Length: 239
Image (cartoon, rainbow, N blue to C red; front, side, top):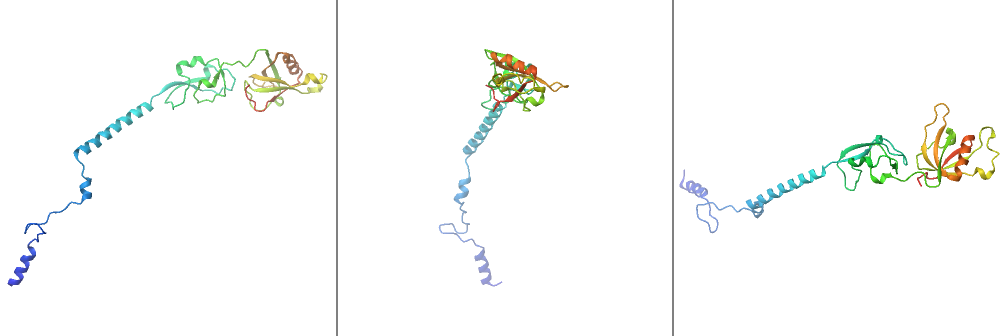
């Protein structure tokens, strides 16, 4: 090997010092600022862990609070508006209540038995105080009279206690009742009190209706002679 080649290899193996550095030593590596910014102190790490732990505890408390259950009164059988509520119509359930719901507590169940449904009650729903009323279906100065009706003489629409109806005079079989004066045939305003089941043999159903005391005898006479029919008022709502 020539002296020239030996000197060249030795020169290439010797590290070259940067400005201000020590000859023969490698230059220090500078860490980028972005990497230095990612390093966190032990204090910051500890605070993060504490905050996460606190958030978990708070979430657990919130979940526990939202899972609180209350025993309330439920509806287990359909109850038409105006009908008396019986013990068999009601049940109980333990539920987690959403904000704003105020059903009747289970321990107050007996306070609604015997009262009337202010609206139609649907099975599977919670019972609230606003759905119950103590108002009577028969006002002062009214009479409750039965009206026997064939299927074609009353609406196919299901009737419920409290609905307003008109008892209307119609000609009977063989023209019965046509001798009555026209002024005695005027429609009579009434309110449904109870709806009976149709007879299996004749199909006739008896409805109890509340009418003004002076109209009671007239409606009874129409029913007895087969001259009564029932018309549902527009809307058919409760009074």
